[in-house]
Amino acid sequence: MKKIILLCVLIVCFLAPVFCGGASENTSTKELVVYAYDSFCGEWGPGNAIAQAFEEKTGIRVRYVELDSAVEVYSKIVFEGSACPADVAIGMSDTMETDASLFAAWTPECDAELIPYDRKSHLVPFDYGIFSFIIDTQSNGAPAPTCLEDLTKDIYRNKIILIDPRTSSVGLGLLDWTVSAMGTEGAFSWWSRVKKNVLTVGSSWSSAYGLFTEHEAPLVISYTTSPVYHYMYEDTDRYRAVEFSDGHLETFEYLGILESSDMKAEAQEFCNFILTEGQADIAVANTMFPANTKTVLPEAFEKVALMPAKVIKPGDRSVQQDILDRWAQVMTSK
Image 1 (cartoon, rainbow, N blue to C red):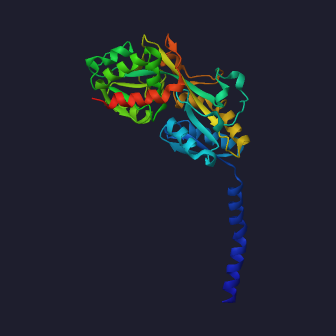
Image 2: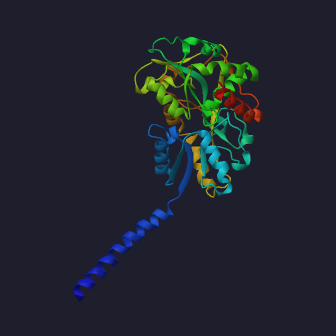
Image 3: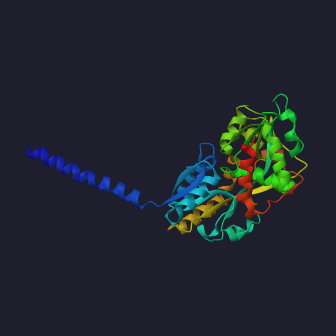
């Protein structure tokens, strides 16, 4: 019996350093918490590849908190305030009004290579896109529209998929696009007439675009770069961005370092990685234009990504909530 007890003690003593070493290694490893929208950190998004490459380079782990949309990312940050556990937030867009005090001011190492942006928000662009309707050219009975007004025609009855601007930056982008192109009154006249042609209003870009690729409707609001994905991974050009005479609204996606983070140095290191080594992955996986102008893009961007002749800027952000409230009234009224 004594021999058995002694043997057990020896085994425990032998294994103890192994267990303690593993625990010590885990607790000493730095981990960044990153809030991001679903398509960024999902299976087909750039997030996981970037996190893995960043950890291999720096030893710093990245843990994503996946949220449905960019609007939800920002709403969660506002709700949590100083108790927010995130170090970095990814996905806020210039279609959203944000509070600069929630984010730390910093300057990227590659700042001179980035597209021009407003530094007062403390947010830095990591990619950008241009809103457009994407058409399935192999669908029946849906000719390509040439302007926003065309979408109100009876031929597009139940053929359009839109996205809720209260829950999605892409949905908000279309709302801003119509207001910027037509003026407030003209825009809401358009919304009241187009809603009869809308098959559904998705809560996020992922849900809406998923219905589109399942051929539920031949038109969906997205970006001029969306056909790049289909060309590269599905070897098809059936999905195309439609150019409108109204012009197209340009939009930027931003990342930010939380003011409440106690890992700002590591967060800056991660953001700098995204803005340099991560740019090609983001451009391809997000099918957006990269914010870093030095990024080399695949040939597919030149072949199928539409660069419209007319690009317009968003309007006054200070009245955004009023516009959202009015949108909800128009879309729910008979």
